[in-house]
Length: 178
Image 1 (tube, helix red, strand yellow):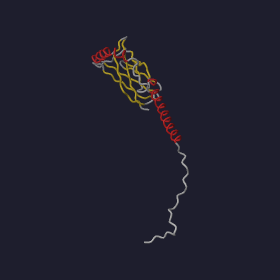
Image 2 (cartoon, rainbow, N blue to C red):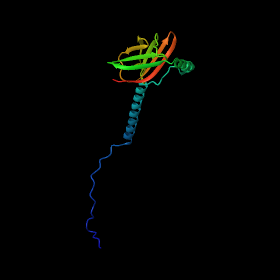
Image 3 (tube, helix red, strand yellow):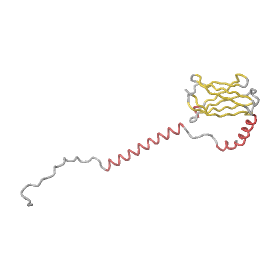
Image 4 (cartoon, rainbow, N blue to C red):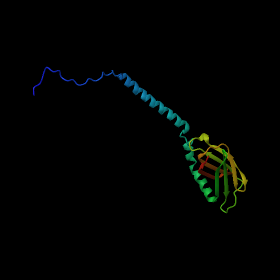
């Protein structure tokens, strides 16, 4: 087939003119630096919030706590040997929480004349803890009301002493409903 050299060659359709790109090396560097500054700022804010709400310290001195360990085991064994039966209850009264404790010896007789303290411990923030003294309302029955306690999970720690001797300790995980 002969080729006609006199006819103009067909050109492909032309593309519209491209605008020059504004993305330069400096712009990429600025975006990367900005990205990492935002990440570092968010990390710093999250760490600050986490440390303020849960400092991670459970006891002030682990050494002193370890030195009391054998004494604590002996106290727990003496409590078990007494054979006391305890019934504790935490319930809502309006915005307050009522704590009741019933103590009976192994024969079922009420245990009287104790100084009883209750501590409602928040699992994450020690500043939320509440402490109160329970009064003896009937033979072997102790009660108190702790004001302004919000709902949620708590640890109810009860300690009873006779004179200087700690004769009863109980720690229970409880849920206080709103």
